[in-house]
Image 1 (cartoon, rainbow, N blue to C red):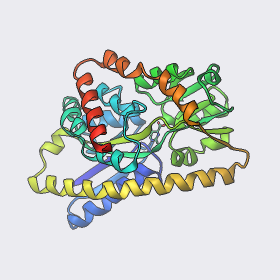
Image 2 (cartoon, rainbow, N blue to C red):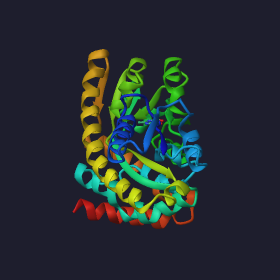
Image 3 (tube, rainbow, N blue to C red):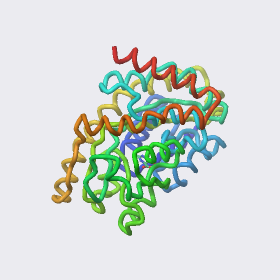
Length: 314
Ligand code: 6CS
């Protein structure tokens, strides 16, 4: 068999490294009977296109990050809420790898859209690139701030005081360059890879949220797999979880050093606890807003996820 796996990122990026390692392990374990073809960003379409291709069965696996998937599986936006996941790496990894809120509950909303939730993993803390110093919501008043396409992100950045606009990432570099937008948010490895630091002057570390991604499979494809294949895939999934969590950490640390070297004028601002607290307070209405927007089981999933996060942090 041939399995197609499309990612939302470029060669060398975190999602691509994951898919390539998936390919290596699957092809080794099946002795080449199953091959995996990896497609990087733009080869088959943008982020939202990949989800539709997977749900429709044209491809078997893809990354579907909550930042974009909210347009298709609205409930997944619980993963985009700031100040929700535990702060420690170990507790965060535990929630993302095994939380029942995600794999029992949220997975049902994926299934109803033709998607099997295969895994969720972190890609690094979200960092803002801006063209001026930002320390408080008032500093964002005149800033057109690019966010991913999930509706909750527009609400989040409105609460933060900015003027948010949703775009696929392929349009972000030119938007910053032409000053149509002045800011965007992504983990450091991605800012470096997409070269956003070339068209920006400040990196702001707000400490509010982790970038997470999900890997999904076409549901009919998944349900048609043999028990043996399903068991293999579960083992591969667990093995890759350890691999990718270490990998993204290493890449994010290296990226900051590289960006400082490339652009010596780049100013790095880490919000103080007091400054961070102002943004945290601003965004407090967001959880209720999400439940109001999405309805259905979203409130229940959110409460469950909070409980799983609290249990993991203990
Ligand atoms: O900003 C975005 O849209 C993209 N960011 C990352 C880290 N991965 C893919 C996603 O589409």
